[in-house]
Amino acid sequence: METTHLDERIAGASGGISGAASILGSWQICHGVCLGIISLLGVIGITLTGMPLAFLTKIAVPIWLIAVALLGVVLYFYLTRHCISRNLILINTGLIVAGTPFLALQPYQVWFWIVGGSIAVSGVGLFVKDKLTKKKMRQVRT
Image (tube, rainbow, N blue to C red; front, side, top):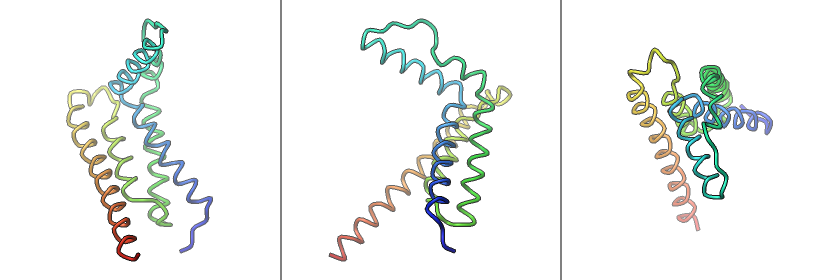
């Protein structure tokens, strides 16, 4: 089935937004991002007190749910049009699993990080492997 350039752009944008939203869905990751921003601003001489992105903790669950919905859109395009890399889908899925923000699941958060991180790292590994394989194929042809 032939895909259009617009389909590919929509699917790519959905995947990127899904991954970014999944990262912001976890309080611990938000906390780390805030500390990084505070540190970066401190290096250039700007002092902050408090957490500049603390408001994200109030909207962590809706952001995570949006990430899951966008992952659903990406999966739809993958299954119907095959216009998205399965490795990128694996990376996004891993980030979403690792960023699970529900308080009831906090005692198991380490397991979500391990499982989600493993999925994301395997996606990165497969992505790199595919790139290296394509590069070798190009070298063999020349």
